[in-house]
Image 1 (cartoon, rainbow, N blue to C red):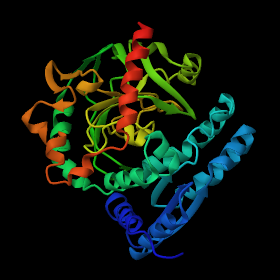
Image 2 (tube, helix red, strand yellow):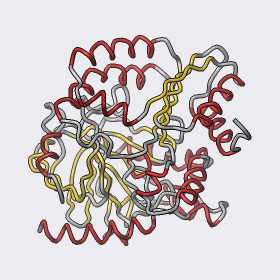
Image 3 (cartoon, rainbow, N blue to C red):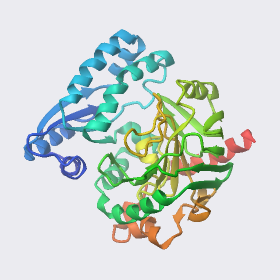
Image 4 (tube, one colour):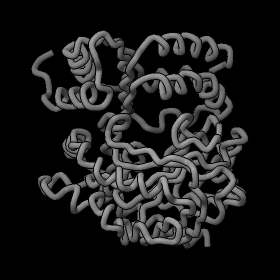
Length: 404
């Protein structure tokens, strides 16, 4: 196989040691989608070094699409049964999700996608609730194209972000969690946005690299029927193999009563009609990863953008930050509030907490980029998606003016 890329070994150590904290004798499933064999090998070796027992499952996008094109409920019921039994036998899960083409499943009929996802939902629920897990993307050429940069530049950015010292987030996240746990009402304002909702009695959850890489958010969920107002997202979102720009949602008594976007609004509404819970919100989160500054149409990165928040139609996380909403859908949609994206404010019980993407209270300033990157090399703060971000801003302004 030749020499192992030392960055693979460093990332494998982060995932097996810091993220899922493998212990002797634990079974770990390495679930790899279009990922180089060398990275899978690095994970197998890292797991064995901790005396854990690795298992591997490999996926390829074109094969997955072909299976989905003619998917039947019976086929996926059988498949889900097998996968659920395997998931019940492991203690840890590491999911690496690469793609040769992020739109590979864009032509899969909606009903077939819905059938497959519905049958596999219990597998995901078991993994989330019963195992130690972490998921991350893989930096292939498709991701570099999304970021409008070279493959090499994107890989350098990716490994800097994914091997960041996520323990540095903990002090500021603890402070943010304490404030959110005491908060009753949230108000968010910005271009096209005036939103109010309650988070009273729903615990906030810190995210410091144990479950997602990259990471950098604190999330909770709104009281299910408390959401009122309008929200204009400004980050493109890819869901079920299709892209949606400038999604605008109007809420009444917690429910999305109007949904439009620059593009396929009919398909947007079809997804929101998947089930009763899809038009209610299952997550509210504030993102602040200092390395991630511009959209890349990849939600594991975009939802952590410095100065952003995401407001998620669909399923709440059962067992933590749970408002009781249940759905096959969990669609993280992102809004950036930094000045170059139009700015915006977040208020907790009437007190200004973040303005134009920066935290205002002294106890939360540890989460602002200048402090998180205080001892980092200057190049680590660069995001290769800068050009993409600037284009997204221009597109957002054009599309918003059209909707008005």
